[in-house]
Length: 244
Image (cartoon, rainbow, N blue to C red):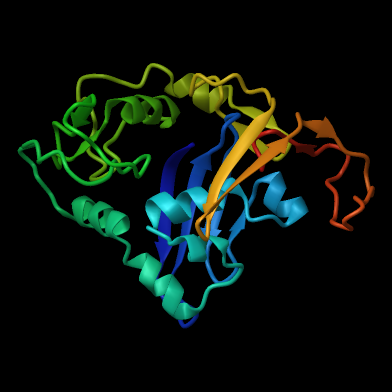
């Protein structure tokens, strides 16, 4: 999964709210909201009301959430404000604010601002040469550039990533975006198959590793209820393999 954008709504009385745009395993773009009651626009959360893997991903990697927090259904104001101050988000926001017009490369440390995973000197690392000088995984930046929908810009300072080049796929992405039901799908741009299959989920919740196997996507009849009583999707909605 790849986080392609995030936004922060500061505390207005109920705690900070943070949204993330995340590309799932079949290329659909979902929006995750971390708020009093976390939500995601993926079918698994919308129709099954499960705590989906997209929420778990941003909780674990972007917000430094604990196993207990990942398992929580609701958050208090104190929880949200604490996650707002996570080390990963702090570094990202500080780097965005720091201007480095010389493009001097900064030390390779901390998390990549795209995948929120740690960076190592042994990995392919690229930096913003025309702005802040911050580092990113080369693989992540390549995926980011293909999905940017315009001139490629630094995810930190928004400077042009390469002042002499345009994004060769920008027009194709903008004009030929594929919709799968209610979702924008960027599987082609991200080198994904765009089709569902058998997915094995692995979560660590409260110290217990849970494995869950999900079947391939299928059409759902309108109004049909599962034995669990959860609401189903309409006739055009697909509960795809990207949802868990």
